Image (cartoon, rainbow, N blue to C red; front, side, top):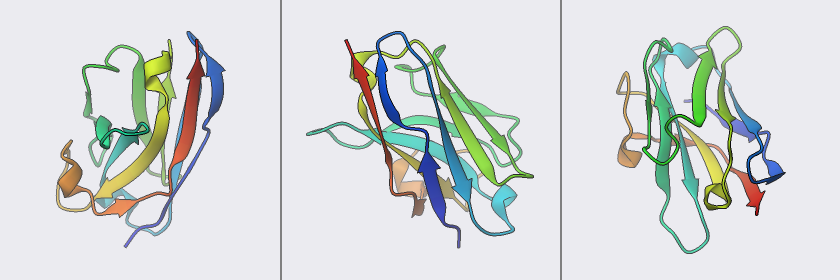
Amino acid sequence: QVQLVESGGGLVQAGGSLRLSCAASGRTFDTYAMGWFRQAPGKEREFVAAISRSGSTTYYADSVKGRFTLSRDNAKNTVYLQMNSLKPEDTAVYYCAAADRFDLTWALKNYHYWGQGTQVTVSS
């Protein structure tokens, strides 16, 4: 199993940037595909970005493509979500997740390990 802890959320003005981090426990971090999801009040949790086990491949939701960048450092058991040009509609709780049966996946149902979430608020 893996335990995930997110950090880096906060309040930022529209057009600003934030970097979220997700630190994972355990020695098998590089066997997990990693993803970020977000959930706004009253809405379902939605996919944001995913990265393969090696970090060589990434996949983004259309809504964040070109603005967000996902990376991972397997030596540090950490994934990073760099968020630029933030918009008020990016406001949500952001969750880090790990999938142990896929090299890369964006389906929420494939992620079995979740962090506690970190709040991102973008003011207009």
